[in-house]
Image (cartoon, rainbow, N blue to C red; front, top):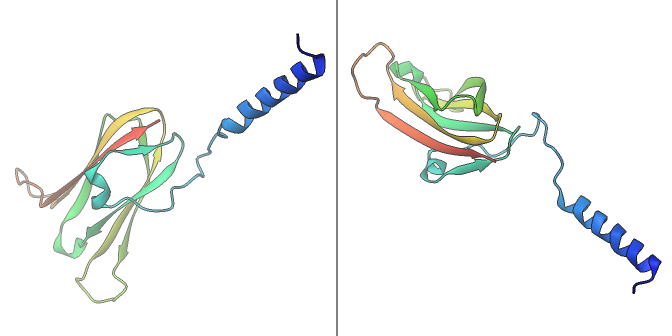
Length: 137
C-alpha cells in the first residue's frame, strides 16, 4: 500500500488545509467600516454574527422631524448608540446625518424600518421610510 511517511504527510496536509479554511471567531469590536445608507436598502444585506455596523440617514431635527427605528423580529440586531452630526457648513437649519451603531447578535433575518416623522403628529404617514433587510449568518 502506501508508506507510513506518506500517510502521515497526507494527514498533516489535510489538517493544515482544514485549519486554514476556517475563519476565526469575530469579536464585538469587529466593525464594518463603511456605513449603510438608503442606497443599500435596495437589496438584502448579509452580515456575520458579532459585527458592529452603522446606518446613516439624512436628517434635519430643526424641522421637528426625527427618525424612529423598529426591528422585526427583535433580538437579532441590537442598538448600541444613536448620534446626530450637523452639516460641516455650520449654517443654521441645514441638517446633517443621523447615525445608528448596531450590532448583529445572532443568526437570523430581520427587517429594520426607519420612519422619518414628527413624533407628536398622530395618524400621519411618515415623510420618508427606509427599510433594510438584514440576514445574519
